[in-house]
Image (cartoon, rainbow, N blue to C red; front, top):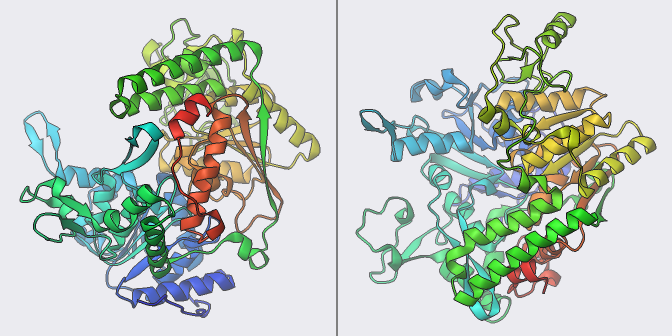
Length: 636
């Protein structure tokens, strides 16, 4: 089937914002793809090119539809999608956020849900209701199953935003022990992916700026959702059957080991075995042919003029351990190397990949701050409730409905000072009973709530990395006091330590992590964007590394590198996107002579793989036989 070339669509009259020329081309392509046998496709534009407005324009292209559209997003993007749909369409679309915190929506029947134009759900919510339908849930008197209203609806469209969220489970297994070659073994049994596969839909769309993140095998789940034949099919080695749905609902009539996906047989296995030579080169050609047919991908560098984007600069800020940190880090590294070598010597590496990841995690955490390891369940911490207003031990501690703690006197003054007070921690409207009984100290609960409560902070010593960050922010403040920053980390505990240190340095912060509700997340985003005195937004990479539009910031600090470069690209582009007017500087913090400096090098190899398959960069094509684990543990 030839590549779809659709020209440029007219500016949609139903959309209030003027689309860029390349966005009009994208809209024309999407409309044309729905007329092809694929009935959808993959919009793989690089982050910040406006995939959301193109998708909303597509929804409005045949409005009103007789059936609703379902949009699946990461939790952090629920409120942002709602706001953008309302803004782009002047409120024409009747939209419902279907989430666990919305009890009204959860109790709606499928008939009631069908009355909406757009349903917005998080992947977590879809997985939860599908699990209850398929696996059931326990009650005192037995196991119950609950039919999913979402899965009973025939949708007009389903749009997966940040579609890489449905990538199937990945484990690592050494195939050629003598070469330490790692391959990706796909379980394809994750409930999130299954929940998406099971949806009834006329047109299917995947939106993602990172179709590949780690390995080529991850592309299968997108192919499977889009129902791209024959690559979404399974073949039986013994009876020549072909069952697209085999991976979901086979009842045992075929032995699972007899089945192999066409994707694995034609693409993944040859590439893993031969790289870019022989059969591997042929597989790469097939993969490129496939992506050309179903995917439209544009890069920001090719549309800089029409986007009116300022320059983006990326730096690696390198620092060495202090003496005490170095001694502790060396002990962790040496211990990890010994365990790794033991697994190798005993030939049991395959059975211990989880333990190996645990060792790597420890090496990463010690590069941030030793307390991330030492204070996981430490006794003797300060063990106090801390007031969200004065940052001191809470006197006559009381708690708000959003589960944050205050001194009674601080809360009274704060509430009386403002007409409509918001929580200073999560920024949703503050609801608190000022006359409630004083909270009793619950040691286990207090220590669990924050790493700060597990440490006697009056005796606390910062880390080289945290001080490097404080220095950079102070320098930035001196150069230009109006700049705002986003600070990303993989570890919420690290963000808690950073927040404590920054606030004591006189720097105002906002936090966003995975424990927050959609309303709390959106309130925190709004507070950061709208208040000039808030300098730093501390964001968990997992909770907020995707789907955020934070153009108020022009500086990004990536505290700890990850071997998946795409995750860092996503986070870096939270500020460098349409609407940004100032140059953006991305600073990656890295501790030299640690596992982090090796991970930065490992990222370069993964970047070459991603460029060679998604961006069709022939110069980046190379055989992928990395000695990943050996390199991370031994540096060679």
